Image (cartoon, rainbow over all chains, first blue to last red; front, side):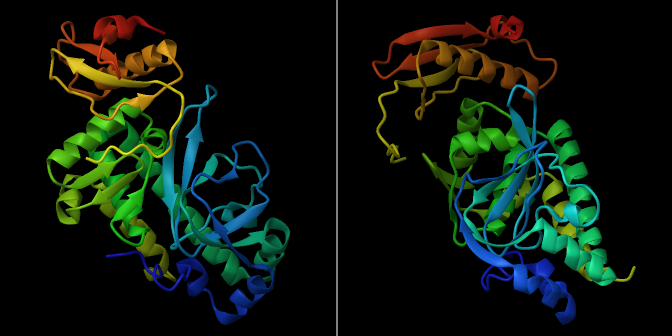
Length: 239
Length: 86
């Protein structure tokens, strides 16, 4: 089941806002197409823009001093990157990189902060989503340390498949190795194992999901947990 | 497996095969700048397997055989040597 709004290019967070809250943002929102690999935020640098994907996927990465990193969250059309700027901080804690190209609505931080300061309801939505994102990051921190890398790869492929139109996902080993924090050769070996099981087919630069149900069976619990975490942002309103 | 390369580069392609232990033949390979990059990849691969695999496994016989397109073994990195490499 795809994440909400994938077909319509609608961002779930923006869609949840009241008409008056959305009207605070709309004059400043710009739609743009972002390509795979584009870096939207670098750790330690000021956040300039808040992104609301309408399609595609952004990955948030923790980056170590040596330059190697690991993914800590994925963000698709259900969420946003940079909403923390409407609450407190202004400095990016991680790298944000476009994992699947897509259409993103973006807003500069200054008008975003003005809008949030004008509406407590809008601020509340951004806080709710930000809390969920922190929960997702906790989950992935545990996942990265405790779960088998093969189960993590399955989880990641499912999260990516959710945000992608069609079963053939453009993914290089380089990206996957960065997401999982392993060598490219390790990705090759893991992909081969999944291919042998009939769950995926891979070629250089792309992975095709061929048996989604069994891929879900091989993924760690974090796939389902993450979906519930995001759903709660939109379903537990007022609790 | 079509194995079509997305773009042609001048970099050599190296294949990272596991020997002994649970053998794995790398049919995809990676384009890398040269032998030192291949060595670093092999060491990282061995370390990944030791880090990610079952804790109490005897890795003493495992090694990474790195081959190139001429199918010669260009490097042979025993896992236990990789473990000591910083």
